[in-house]
Structures are given as structure tokens and as C-alpha cells.
Image (cartoon, rainbow, N blue to C red; front, side, top):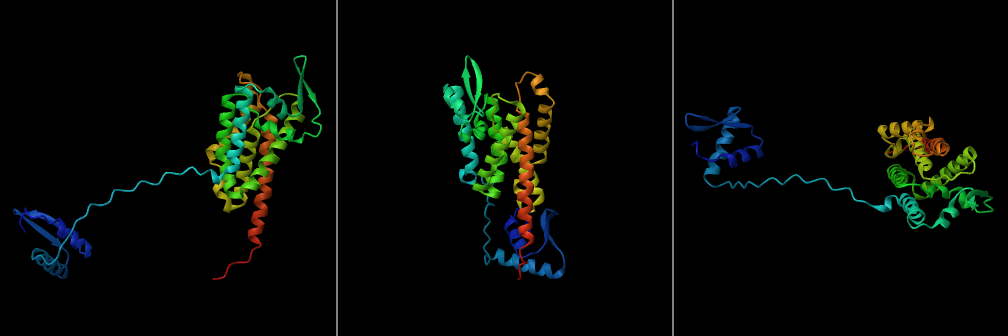
Length: 283
């Protein structure tokens, strides 16, 4: 074939018919190499039909590789986590930006009333929400920012697996355990934050996913486990306070982690036993 002849359409046709071939230049001409006499005869026939105009070959530009769709933010997958984050941010703005000290006084545990410039603990007197509400108190921008980020990262995974109602009850129980534990440990001081709930979600997701393989979607990454457990250890040995970052509610953190582990073990075992008790499906 002449060297100036464009054989690209013919090559496409041969590929379409499953005929392996190779085009080389030899002695100022193009030579089409095929394997076997049968293939050579078939290629020759296709070439003659193509030259005679009996076959029309249209080359179309390959479509550009489509970009993977961007992950859409869908609040409906984790409304409980968004609600907890919104409540925490709202309380923080009311207390520390707009100066509504009465909001702080309404959420502490125990009921702390200032007298002569000093905090005075009073009975909660039936105000049982105070057992939970210190979780919504935060004492700095970094404090609330990190807690909300971890709450979203861990909590949304848990919520997608065990559902909205179970997640809400789980967070309330963990918050109650954290607050009571911190009060028993430290007495009448001002404490708060979602850190205990975050550690509870970490422990829950870690253990529940180990016991129930179907819940692997909420298993925290190994790096997250190492970082958070390492931070807990650093706080408990007093290094953070020694560096001047303020007092840390270590009792709440530890109680949150342990209660999350216990609840994760309970939920995971119940779910696994439920799977084992189901009859095998028949096809």
C-alpha cells in the first residue's frame, strides 16, 4: 500500500473484526502484517471492499474520561450529629460571644450559683437536664472546633449504621456517664464539652465493628485510633496542663471511652447473635 495512504480506518475495522495486525514501512510502502494465511485472505477482502467504497468506516473521538461524581453533603444521613453540633455552636455563641451568662448557669452540673464572686454549688432540684447539658459547653474556639470536627467524623458513621434514634440515645447515655464521672472525680468545678461523647463514639464504633462485621462501615481508621488514644494518654499524664493549655476533663474522656466500649460490645454482640439465630436462606 502507498506510504501516503491513511490506514487508520482500516486498522480500526480490523480490530473490530478481531484480526490482530501490525503496519510497518518497507521499501517506501506500507506493509500490513497479519498472522496466518486465513487471516491474510480475510484482511485482503476487507481492504478491497473498503477501497471500493463498500464499507464505510467512521472514526469517533473517544469520550473524555468522566470525573467521579463529587460526594454530596446530605444532612439527612446524620441529622442527630448535625443537631448536636448546631446546639454546641449555638450555646457557645450565646455564652462567649453575646455574653448571656444565664445560659451558662442553666446548663452546668451541678447547679453553680455565683455568690460574692465565688461559685457555689446548689442542688439540681429536679433539673435533671443538667446531667447531660454540660456536654454543650465549650471554653474556646479550638475546643469547640475540634470537638465538632471529631463529632461529625465519628458520629455520622455510627448514625448511618445504627440509625438516628439509637445514636441519639447512645450520645445521651455517654454524656450522662461522662458528666457524672467528672463530677465525682473533680467535685464542684466548671466543666463541659463534647470530648467525652467523642471518645464514647470512638470506643463504640471500634468495638461494635469488631464484633459485628456488618458494621465495618463505622470502624474508625487506625490512624484515628492511634491519634485519639495517644492524646488521651498525653492528657491523663498531665502534660497538656503542664504546658499551660488549661485543665482537661480527663475523667469525662476516660468514662466516655469506657462506656462507649461497653455499649459497643453490647450492641455488637446482640446484633451478631441476632444474625446467628436467623435461618439460612435457600435458593
